[in-house]
Amino acid sequence: MLNRQGRPTQAGEASHEEHLTFTGNKALQQIEPLIFEIGHHEATGVDIDKPAPFKSRLGKHARQGEIGLPGLSEPETMRHYVRLSQKNYGIDTGLFPLGSCTMKHNARLNEKVARLPGFSDVHPLQPTSSVPGALELMLELARYLMTLTGMPAVALSPKAGAHGEACGMMAIKAAIAAKGEGATRNVVLVPESAHGTNPATAALIGFSVKAVPARPDGTVAVEDVKALLGPDIAAIMLTNPNTCGIFEPQIVEIAAAMHEAGAYFYCDGANFNAIVGKARPGDLGVDAMHINLHKTFSTPHGGGGPGAGPVVLSERLAPFAPVPFIHVENGKPHLVESRGEAPAGNKPFGRMTAFHGQMGMYVRALAYMLSHGSDGMRQASEDAVLNANYIRAGLADLMSLPFPDHPSMHEVLFDDEWLKGSGVSTLDFAKAMIDEGYHPMTVYFPLVVHGAMLIEPTESESKAALDLFIATLRDLAIAAKGNDKERFTSAPHHAPIRRLDETRAARSPVLKWEKPTPAQAAE
Image 1 (tube, rainbow, N blue to C red):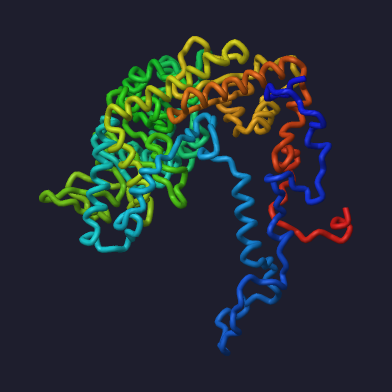
Image 2 (cartoon, helix red, strand yellow):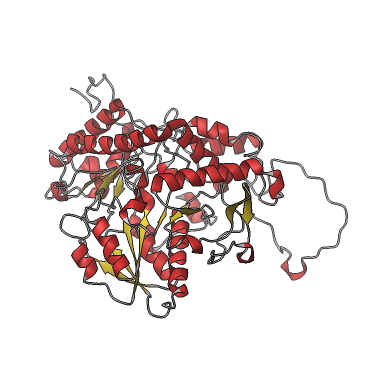
């Protein structure tokens, strides 16, 4: 008899449920309770001398009772957090197929450069005269971003993709107001397949949102856009390649229609990693686009602090870029910190952040660009598209494609049509992937596809890694179609935590640890 790994089952080998241990641990897979459950309120890992007499200034705000935090020894504290870290799944653990999120390898060279003195220890309150190297690096990064996108200006200060969206749309709003149309142009068009942040951003800064339907092939038709245009339309927020993993074939025509109507074209740049070195958004008619440095240029998600979401701007919007920005004067870079300092012709809409951006992200992104060069970045885009289509070809005979007539770009989208009649749902399939050692792909998004499964392998993965991933999903797909429901509906079986009641968790979330009652503790 063969097990699922294809090797003979050893005598006495049984499922993990039949071998309970006294500790609850399973060899190197150790359980780890909450810190409140293993710590003691009366214990502390440090000895602090009693303070000298002092007069409290807290008044009525002073704490009246015990703080209630658990105390652990130093070894206990270390073990707790190390054990928790061992339960994480990250890009350094294995292939991370989340569609739309682009979980790619973060090159260690970039990390080394970001930790160099002068970059790692730069402080935003330093005099600019003491950080000429940092300013030069920001200028060089801006030059690369403008060259790659074909845009004349870039705002570096936004901290993330959604923050960048807000920056671009605020620049559009300022440009509309400057033309005296602020009271009339107040509607933003957003395709049904857009990222959820798009309509949220537009609404946040005071626009109304009108949906653009998706065609049966997953793209946006210029005719549908034209039918919605009028003097009230401020902009469209279109992702390209879109969230279905498809390059919008009528993007140039859509941009032209928007401009003819006096409106602007905001492109969600989340998927720029599919077209770097292949197409420049500025050439497509884009007026503003944010760039996720973590998705396209390999910086970590967040990086231990704020991320970075620079926004490139067209000539129509460049004057409205927010402060702070770098202005080169007499051959020297100068930080423009306020509207009053802006050179003639510039009309900054204001300031989005306290300081100038996240230096660590700038360094990592530029290190990636310099180490790859233009040909390397173009190849990264080509490899990302190749890998997505390789997975598509390896699974298309078992899993259904909602848009088979379009080649995939950087990600491939499946739906749940192939699961009909199996009793297995998209969620069940995703949970079973956990048992196989993979983080699930993005599920149930985009919303225009029922039971969506969105897979993005990125350019980082080798053919061997992709082959194993494809073989694993083929095995799961065959099992799902073969009535092996228990493998799916009760999965994951081997994870540290079994499947939650997600409906109950959403409706009645437990957000705070409460000490169990004696009855609960006895259970």
